[in-house]
Image 1: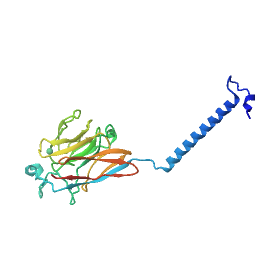
Image 2: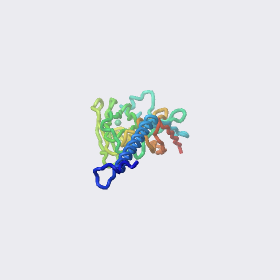
Image 3: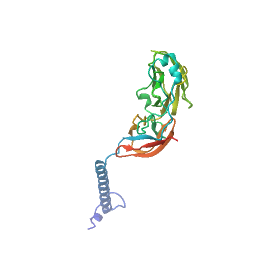
Image 4: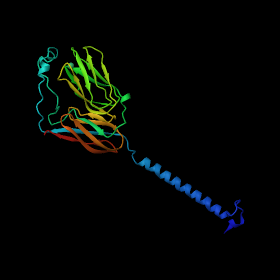
Length: 265
Ligand SMILES: [Cu+2]
């Protein structure tokens, strides 16, 4: 029945059945919208939401690294040598486990910059113990405080020698029992060198990263980069003597594993 023809729509030229039709269309649209929304909500409820996860792995060294060098000048130094009555300290260029587990590899997400939480991160600590820097390989964030301690009974001269513009060089005497020295670097820099001007064998290498996504492999060659948001990344593993390697990894639905193998050439 064309009942609409008998009604007045209030709008010139628009018939009542057109108006009813428009109303019906409107309800239809609303129904479709509601259905879409319901389906989306259902999908969210069923599908696991991608969450931040860890990137984990093991780093191995193939081949036999060159023997570490004995630090004879340390041994010969009256103050430092006294701390090694029954041993001779050596360099620590290759810290390798019995099965080739490689420590002191800095692992980070390449190209992830501007994400530093360094300003609010707890300070990193670099100590001087037995006339050596401990640890000798360290990684910090841009803006993160680095505290240098002197646990030795002798004087050291902490000389930071960055090479990237914006990271200041500094050279400070630190007496035994003296106050800690504080450092912070604004720019990312791989293996920023700390040395001691009193003891020429003393070095530490501090990699400065512009994100919280990094770590240094432990004595078992293991590394964990924590709380990485979902996404595709290039993971870089950098060893001061062996160079660096990269691998692609995707973080989704749980932890991602990526292993590295370095080789002595
Ligand atoms: Cu020193």
